[in-house]
Image (cartoon, rainbow, N blue to C red):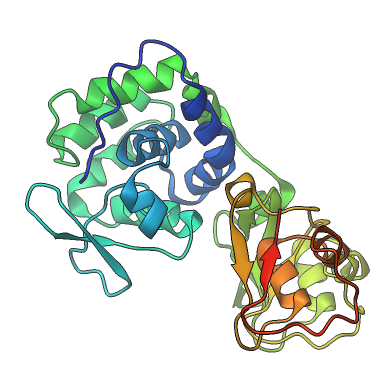
Length: 292
């Protein structure tokens, strides 16, 4: 793994706290799903990505320094133990967090860690070092210091996070059908529609009025859903996450104002407003849009 030098963390660091605030929801979700302590996930993410500032994190959304190994997805090359080593690249930070959890849970050398209590962050930190996650001899203690300084162990005590996540964490089945995986983005929850889904069927599974879900997605309750569509489960935000403060969205072929709003989890009305556009504007490929 790639470890970014972060120096001694004996004093509180605003950038670290910002990273924690941004990704704690994702870390808790991973804990509930994969049983990796949220404190460990956050501390590793902080160290491996330099609080999200490393080249791998910025260019490849790789927050945990995971190299390619048997990876079949996108890649990014970076100097580590050797020059031009292959690292995994992701479409979003969420995908990196998910792959990190899966990486630990599916490799035999980390199996003993999952016998520890979820609150035993010291055991997890020492176990990761012993299993060879990082070569830095101080790696375990650095993880422990970060967890204690920022009180990340408090997140390990969460038994349930939200009724949506609680219902789905154990991958239960309903009527023989596996439940949708619920993900978190922009302080909201969403699922990806499957073939045959309707607002009514999603509402019945989630336990929320299908009329409300349709309204959250700014659609008619009887609208036909397309496979692969993002369906938000709570009212969307007015802006994209903070990471897009200085970034713009460039319109691609086939996109609409609505699909862009759905992608970022923001309200369609807000997208028009922040770009000073009217609903009758004819969107063109290459248009530059603010999303925050």
